[in-house]
Image (cartoon, rainbow, N blue to C red; front, top):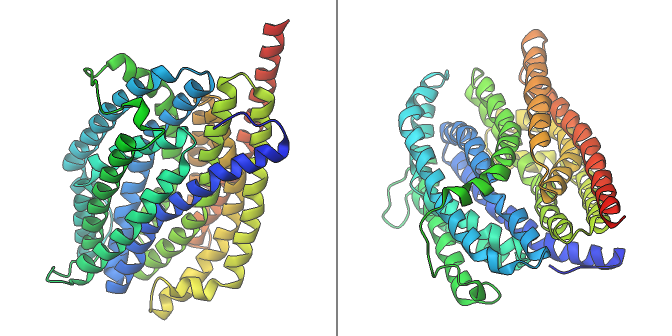
Length: 455
């Protein structure tokens, strides 16, 4: 990352950072995509079991990961302020913290998983697959959290191509392991959806080992000597990351958990409805990788410029990111409209599942447009380390407006499960609008602050 002066230079630099992040995010999500698609080929119960398991796992993972990705604006601002000597210890303490968080989640899962699943009206086969799928994922939790911590460090330096290469190397490993454990190849037992969890855990371990190797041996990472001179864990250092990371984590949790809550509410319907909903949400989430990647790139770019008190440049990056996201959202919506048959057929051979998936996909066109505004704005605000008000906005938009309205429409009208999707659209739109006004306020405040200091 370096200061760019003209708009053209900023667009070029932002694109250089964004494209590898996008490829990385698509690659990482493709692991979940292949878990879902390949499990669906094993049977509707396997698809539904992985759907329920994912609905429980994704909010937990993304919420905790929000704490880990707080490392990106911290390191970006240190680099922008030319305080490189402070970076190594920040990374080491973040690794300690990632291991601790993984341990907390694993212990919580041990005591709560059976209770959570027992509260859901699921067929016995679906419940068993969901339970063992999550247990298998839990085995790879520590490598996953360490990898995401290291990836935040890599990306904060602007070296997003390295993360891209690690993910592209890990993806075929994940597909091969899915093939082995889901369908029982090369002497392994055919485990269906449970095998997808085993494959993912082994892939997380592979990605962690690759990232450690790259940071230890290659420039510019090696000059930081991250894996030498270890000190004892520092609660004060953890607190610095937690102050930023916890609000980010909860904001992400509030957004992702609303999707999980909808999946849990839809579990009262039949297996075909659960499978169709999961297929549609899985594909829509794949499209979400574009605004999410833009959000991550904006955190790096805005954080770097804000660290150097170049707030006019930071504002320009924000507008660049939002514009790119909206353009691609329009293209994605058009793609869903034209190719809905082909998209639905990716997930199942069952005609009833395909037809219902298509109907869910049409609603996805609209809420991914809201994501195109909301996600990049969140990324820009994180670059400014403005996270506490964003947390409140996320809670109100998703849990006070989105979910209750969806529940009411689904239960009080003849729309049925589609009502929940209307609620998702409403919540995401409300979030995007409030976040936009918050960004305008922060940008003006930062520029005014510099003016007063110079005066």
